[in-house]
Length: 246
Image (cartoon, rainbow, N blue to C red; front, side, top):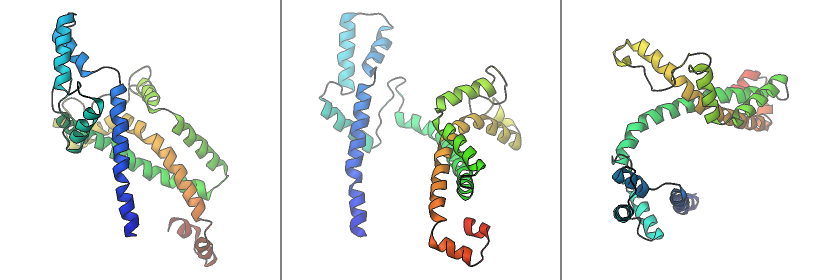
């Protein structure tokens, strides 16, 4: 067991290096660069060949972009490991500060969507497994596969159009986490306002994971209910509810 754990822990190193290599080279292939951003900001859109060349050289040296690619990668990897993400090319604020500003919102949305995914998908998977090949199982399967196939950005656009005041109903807000001045409202009024703001984004984050988790739950339950100890529990006279849910 110890050798297995050590082996798995050591596998983290090449995995981490591989992920960082792919990430770094994807960033290099992306269009645009800090050089062009700074050039536009410094010249105000006015093209001057001499000025442009000077700013380009200064910016490349400032960000280490004039060094060989492997040197850039090692420098970038060192900063990633030490959580030194530098400053934003756009507003020159610390990237780590900007991450911490947005992290609570991302965590809030992610945790809610994960909780809802599990609390809905597991009962659905259990129900489908215990009613295998029934009409309800087939309907659930079709609906979940359709949900799993829908891209979230497309669903988000539809929800904005249908429920966010686009072309039909204006039911849910489509931006922000709270209405203006909500901090001075009574607590339950503020909670309801927050929930209304979270409905659309949480829906877009939840339905895809819900569909896949429900299928995993169904497959796992089908494997378990065929085991010998389940047959023994039924032979002892235990109710179906206890056999399935306990």
